[in-house]
Image (cartoon, rainbow, N blue to C red; front, side):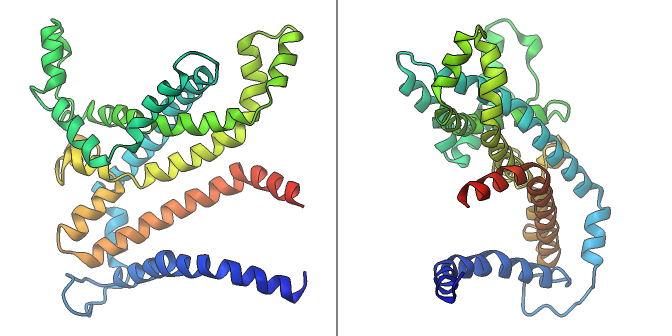
Length: 299
C-alpha cells in the first residue's frame, strides 16, 4: 500500500474517527473520572473516593438483581423473537395477496415511539384496565392478575411488550436475508424430493445464519441497554419491586434521581464494560467467521 493510499484512507476515516472519539471515548473517560468521586453535581468534584463507588455497585443486591433481569431479558428476547421472526419471515417471503400490507403492519410497532408504547401498554395493563375488563366480560375473571406489579409475572409482561415492539424489526432483517438466497436452491431441492420444511431446515436456515447472528448481536446489545420501556411503564421505583429493573434504570435511580452523580457515572462505566465485554466475546466466537468471510471475499 502506497503512502498516497494510506493518506486517502486516513482522510476518509478521519471524520468517523473524530466523531467516535468525541461522542464515545471521551464521554466514557469523563464518566470514569467522575466515578472516582463522591459528587453531587455542583462545582468541581473534590471528594476522591478511589474505587469505593465501584465496590458499592458490585456488592449492591439491587444492582445484582438488575444484572439477573438483564440476563433474563437477553436470553428470552432471543428465544421468543428469533424463531417467531423466522417463521413470520418465511411466511411473508411467499407470494400471496396483501403481502406488502402485512409487512408494513408488522413493522408498525417498531416505528412507534417508546413513550407512546409504554403509556399505551401501562393503561391497558393497569389494575381495572382494558385487559382486565376484557377478561371479565369474557367470564375469565380467574385470569385477571396484577400484570405490572406482581413480581411473578411482571417480567413476562415486559417480555411480551418487548416482543410486540421489536418483532417487526427482526422480521424485516430476516426478510432481507431471505431475499439474498437464490430461489434455484429451493427449486433444486424440490426436484430432489425434499419437503418444504426439509428445504427450510437444510438450505434456508444455514444460508440465513449470518443474518440471524447479526440480528442476535443487535438484540443482545439492546437487551443490555434496555431503559425507556421499563422506566415509562414501571416508573422510577416500582420496577425494582416488580422485578423488572435493569442496569440502566438502576443508573438513573441511584445517580441522577438521587443527586449522586459520581455514583451514577460509575454505574455507567460498569454498564459500558459489561456491554463491551459481551460484544467482544460475541465478535470473537460468533461473528468472526462472518467477517472473515467478508474480508476474504473483498480480497
